Amino acid sequence: MSTPAAIDWLNLGFKYMQTNAYVRANFTNGKWSGVEVCTDPMFNIHIAAACLHYGQACFEGLKAFRRKDGSVAIFRPEENAARIIDTANRVLMEPPPVELFIEAVKKTAALNFDWIPPYGTGASFYIRPLLIGTSAQIGLGPSRDYILIVMGMPVGPYYKDGFFPVRACVQEAYDRAAPKGVGNVKVAGNYAASMLGDKESKDRGYSISLYLDSAQRKFIDEFGTSNFFGITYDKRFVTPDSDSILPSITNKSIQTIAADMGLKVERRPVSFDELTQFKEVGACGTAAIITPVYSIIRGDKEFTFGKENEVGETLRHLFNEIQGIQYGEIKDRYGWMLAVE
Image (cartoon, rainbow, N blue to C red; front, side, top):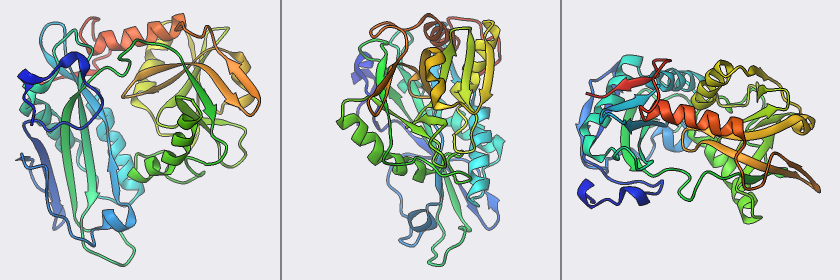
């Protein structure tokens, strides 16, 4: 295992790294246990566990930041707590109480305090809560027992070589999620469903895939692992509203910032034909915050936004604002950062 002293903070990737400890809590006999500190990354699970056979597994992703004043804070963990509860309820899992979730997240950051990258490196501490059903059963049905695991590790900035626009293509061969399915919750299976389509897009030279609604293929849903948003020429912030889209905490946050910038925020169905109205397009999520998109290809048509090697003014401002709040360079005027003692 690496030690913090041996880490090259400026050259971190986005990959698993074993740190000091992680935490877990167990749901058995109808109640949750307290938070337990663990160091061994291996643990036993029954071969008939519900998570392995029936997909009762979901997760979250959030980050802790070493701030300009040397303090550490986590970005909006209460939103992740609410989202994992929504996900658990959708697939009949036992949701962890908000207080338990927040305690586990804070404790993971505190236990690994020295692994949280220094301010100025552009790196952060990625926290991954995981909820799995562990009861042994062969018949289809919800598990009786669950484990909440919260792990964390340092990760580098998503844009190691700079903040530049990327090219995307519409994924026509596969759908990411079905109407009234589980596209709006963070179950593990959603990501397996998009792997092949995303790989094929990357094999064709595109950085990300754009998925349309699977019912009519007329409306924009989201990118493979990120929400879609566009900035129109008349200064509107437009993002799709769909039952198949995972509600992004990053998207919710930048909508707030956009409104304070004077943009009119619209969350509604977005027709694919509306792409011609956008001056700037972005993909947003926890890992990258905002990925500027220069072009979207569908068949023999290409839609472009701004300049090929230049991030649009609005996207850059949104990115700088949210990063500034996270790293303590800008006042946390929304109360989004939770301090880690």
